[in-house]
Image 1 (cartoon, rainbow, N blue to C red):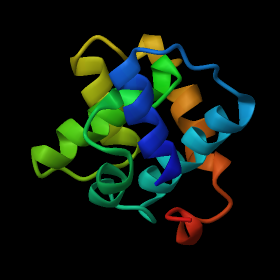
Image 2: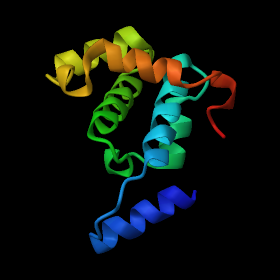
Image 3: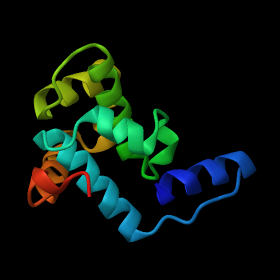
Image 4: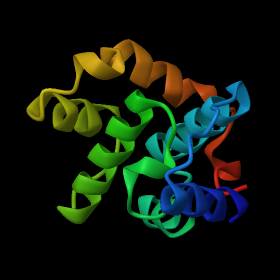
Length: 116
């Protein structure tokens, strides 16, 4: 909730935000939990909002947006569908291809704690 509120405040003031390593790690864990099925995209959308700008790292913005598009289309979220969605939009190489998606997938020790 605090991150979402801070993102809105920054967006309203158009204030630059300094990205920290913990922000990137938190993003990896959130996206990884979604990929593992432990965190529904709708839960993430409720917490983070529908805008990809609440996510700091560009690759994570692209991945999150791909997940939102897949969910809106009624598709499952997994490594294959996200990879295909990114490729379909010409974004696959920008995120680091399958190697980075796999790294995010494995960054979360268990999907059961994704919402925390």
